Image (tube, rainbow, N blue to C red; front, side, top):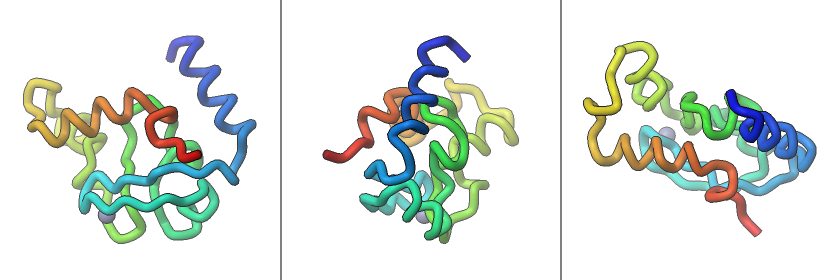
Length: 105
Ligand SMILES: [Zn+2]
């Protein structure tokens, strides 16, 4: 992890759980604007509560299982970037631009 990533993570924690984020499920493509706390209560796996911004970890809603996530493909199934399809590459580039690209307001 670079220094910049650490800084982003820490400042996100400081902004706290009332921060509104666009939550996008990797598996079913559902999008909801929720605070970090609301999303956590609804079972979303999403940073900063679950995992970290800019790091590939599962981003899934309360109804989907992590075994369809990009993290699963890369870390469990051992896929490489070259094996990813267009949608998975878009997910990856979205993750790398977090949290700025999913912040609301
Ligand atoms: Zn879902």
